[in-house]
Length: 390
Image (cartoon, rainbow, N blue to C red; front, side, top):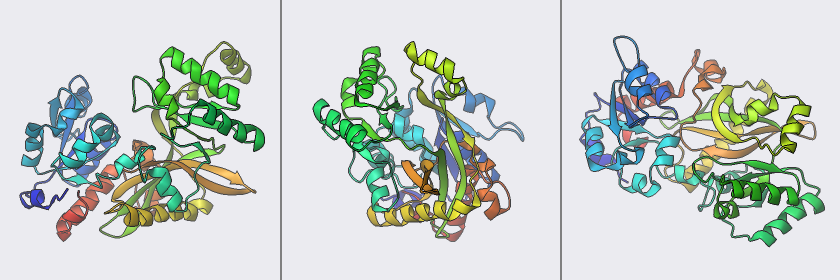
């Protein structure tokens, strides 16, 4: 979508930063206020109080100037909502909510409001599309887990069993993780780990019978190597204006009910497992982690490789925030970075600012919201806004 005609009618001295009400909206708006931008959040009815009450701007407090309440998030593509956004010179910051609750095609083709970042790349987070995140990672030369069954591969039960058996028995392979969408919340994945072919079928059948997953979704699920290592999300920012990659910080996921389960002693864990309990891996937040200075070059290297690859493969390439999510594993006594997920937009952790990497560069903590606002301000001042919007 050519956004230049829309920008031509914008008053760039009176820009509003807009975002969907969830995921990282508060982080975006707080940072935008630091740079003097107006803020607007599009909220779903029944889920608006966070933005319309608790963090509403009043005096010197709060970071949300205005809200637009819709019946459902997907209504943001309605012409009347788009008209309101354009009338306020809105630049939209896309997040995970934006792409989960709205239709990819409608956002890419019908949402005629400038988006900061590439509106075509987020679709590539899905594992069953052409040039998806795993294909991009491999082309960039970044280590990913061994894939036993790709998403949407069309492998039937017999073929899947054969592939699992080859991994576990012939190759003496370690545990595998199955990434399947939940039945009722398709944007959440009902991950489970298996250690034998029989274990896979047993757990799969239990989840289908309980209604947690659908049989057709399980048939299309990714099955891959489970990386035994320290899980870390490497949160980056690529500045188009400065042609520079920044490491904003590092964090890790908190998952319910897995986090609580791991705090129990082994005897209690085994008792629960024997009684049929299965811990879930639904993401509920993040916590900040630190990394040794000795692996910082490795972190920057994979970030630079990914940015360079996207410039060649997916025009216009990476713009602004993204994350390479994975683990630091041990290989022959040395740390190895293995990436098993990519966020091609602002990551969901507001705790990123509390790790020191941005401080080393900027001399102070830096949230994603503020870093995005700085980039927008510099682009406006330099007359280069069209380079970072799609």
